[in-house]
Image (cartoon, rainbow, N blue to C red; front, side):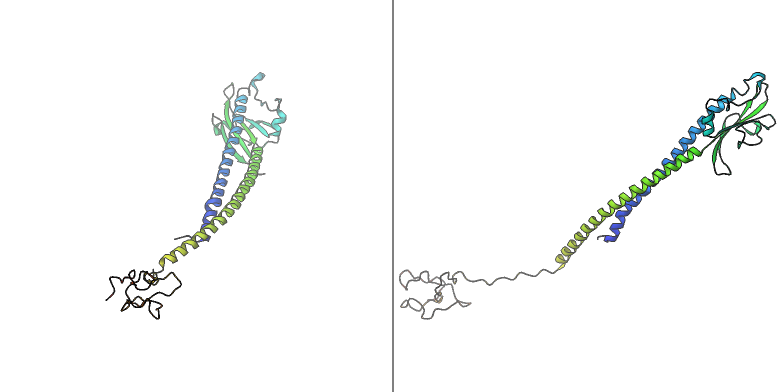
Length: 281
């Protein structure tokens, strides 16, 4: 009929703290995935814009010599801080230019290996650092196929995601602990009330299961024999004659077969003292 208090306590903790904590952890994890996707999308957008700028100015110098604009940019310090790198490959796949000189760009890359549209991919270096790479095939004004390679480090993205993971873990742990404390306090009070209700219902069930006994009737007395006055009642039996006013020895009570008292007055037998209709002459 009732669940045990321990089962109720566990159910309250399960549905009031454990499952909500799991849902919060899942929500924080999904938010981390969305944040990672948004950060990566921002990096891809920056690489695509940089590739578009480089593709129209690779051969704009006199003699149409291929060149990169990394070193000529006024933002070279920011490019170095963000670990932006680039390389240009000739028709034979050999690396013509690279910035910086100690780049991790591939040694060879032909235009046949890449598409005409920007191709993006993530690669992990031997040091464990992740980089986002873009490769693109570009033809020179003379029709010679070249390959452009751009890359940017994802260290800043990984640092941001690590900071988010730490903050989410602390927030999730704090919220979970708070829910556990509140639910434990609520569960204890509710279990105590359920226990009291359980005991009360058991008492009611025990009381209703007992057999009913007929009530004990009090002995009935004839109203005619009841004497409110302290004087002993007169005999209920009619006297043989009206010569005496009362019985010499007044009985204390009427017998079981005595008829109702025939005397209506305490005066001696006379005109006012009349026997009842039930008396025998």
